[in-house]
Amino acid sequence: MPPGAPRPPSRVTPMTQTEQIAAGLGELVGAEVRVTGMASVGAQRATFFIDILDDSTSTPAVAQVSASVLGSVPASAEADMLRLADRAGVPVPDVIAVSDDLPGVGAPALVVSRIEGRTVPRHILRGLTDEAAGESLAHQCGEAFARLHTIGEAQAPASLPRLSHTAYVDDLEAKLDALDNVRPAVRAGLAWLRANPVPEAPITLVHADFRNGNMVVDDNGLAAVLDWELAQVADPMQDLAWMCLRTWRFGNDAKPVGGFGSVAALRSGYESAGGSWRDDAIHWWSVARCAWWAIGLAGQAAAFTSGLTDAIMLAASGRRVPELEYDLLRLIADGPTN
Image (cartoon, helix red, strand yellow):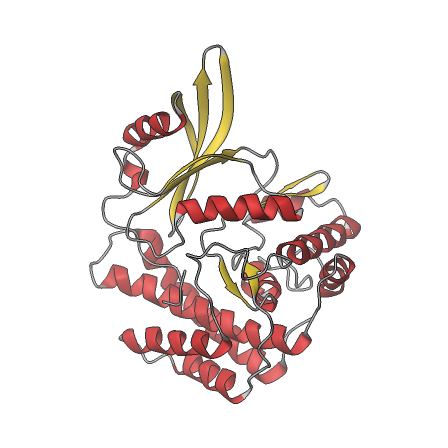
């Protein structure tokens, strides 16, 4: 997979070790930890709601524990990025504790403050009372992107991958070659990327997975940007393209930005906060990230069928690949849908 691409978890996952994780987290934060629920179980990691118990106080927090075989960035680097993003004005949770080797578990873990609000995409969409609220949220996302993209290569953690356009496509092709699957539509996408290069631009810190589903939204709009484990240093237009892919609209194609807002509102927010919008690069990255996601999901399904993992969620990933191939061909033929 490209650096940070989705990979299958190991057979023994943190999701099956709640008591062990609570003990490890307690050692990490220096207090008793009670796991009160599971926020999500993803291909990358499990996210737990926890209470940190110290004397007479109980502090609600969130703990994210990765499977040890994942190719995501180190938890310590993710914590560094959260601190950088906070200083740049991006709304993020506070870092409470971090370990690249959680005691008793042997997996990366990150403990952050709990931000109240909606995180499930369809709940976010239902919670937007009118079109103006969706447009405001898209504008706020644009502002957050622009602030994030002020963090240049020199400031970003050294452990993050640095990606040129050519290297990105080379890696996509290598990972596609490794799959026992022809995928001609994805091959067409990679050929299009090579035939239609866009100029390289100064690279910055990019989130690489900021979308509807990786943010907290409250009654005032964007409350926090979550899940930084795929971050890299690359063309910032990659982030804008990813946010607008059809796969993250959840059936509301009339609103290209996460199913809730317009590209015009996203662009307005981005440019008002100092970002430089480049249509040609956003289109190129729309094709590139659509191909990346198709390859990633095909790889997850292959991991299940080959016996590498028994996670049924990864087996189900394969059903989405044809949808992405359709989107990829549309992007090549018609350009981005605004």
